[in-house]
Image 1 (cartoon, rainbow, N blue to C red):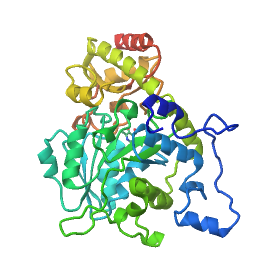
Image 2 (image 1 turned 45 degrees about the horizontal axis):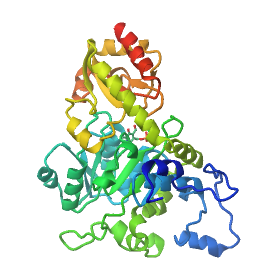
Image 3 (image 1 turned 90 degrees about the vertical axis):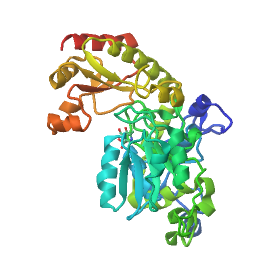
Image 4 (image 1 turned 180 degrees about the horizontal axis):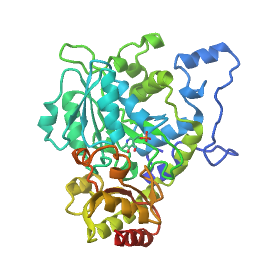
Length: 430
Ligand code: PLP
């Protein structure tokens, strides 16, 4: 499948039916797997067999999804998780521990920001947020001896900033750390960060990957290109979890043993084993089903989003709009470079009249759904000032970058004229 095009990978990737077998990926809904003797089970515990024993540690349906995600991101291995949050958490925990330091762009999803800023800090991992638009040298200058990763989002949610992937990859290489990028909003149909030098890609598969709003899930994909034997200034291994013997596996060295799949193998064998953030087989099946049409869905999402963005940009009641696919947007040039097929389907805009006008717009929309979600076949809207950020004062909202009239919009797959007509009639009422 590695020599096949993206669309073929979407349809045929990973699972292949043998003669008289089901054409669709089967859902193996079993907690455990039966063996005839203890020796065969022991092989599993020693990571010497690709078979399964217990679904927390993997199952055939989840394996197929992981392989498909790796194929679509042009990576070497994947590891599915119970959510996108879990994917970002374990991608960091695989290589960082108390006392370590992570550099992250500031324009990232609020849930990831909290995970980094509060929970990782409580675990002793110091995450420093940096302006991702800084020049390369200034980013590299932020590195400390204990820095273990550079993180960013291809397309920031909800800032809709476009990350300069080549700059981040170069900075990470100069620092001797992996570049981890969350590719949720872009999806591999529009951008494959590994092709620009990213080492690890993460996803909330809950969004466009599933695409139909059925399953919360996540995935980590590795490029197989990072040299985990890199040493620090004192000559010690910088990533001992990857390249030194692991006592919980009789001294196994993950990088030596699993090479291009070492990062994901360790995620499964250590972190998912210990934290239990496994994807369920049913969710893997549904996400796999969604991925089969990812390329055609994204093509239509982009087409609709462009038309809706142009309509909003010219509407007299719309104050401003942020969509990197629109000429004149701050990130338009980077979007042309990294997202030439389109800047996905999420945008934010502000209506004149502030919070009250924003609330009124949502009340009057008939086709678009008010949901805390993006990347769905249904057009989805959210008014953060009256929902996710309602506890904050107006001053605090502005400080958090939330304009009181801000609407976050994820354009769906309905007839584009109907989406536009819905916004037109709702805007007329504010
Ligand atoms: N990363 C990004 C870019 C997201 O937008 C989200 C959720 O919106 C997440 C991660 C977290 O994913 P999940 O909700 O599946 O845990």
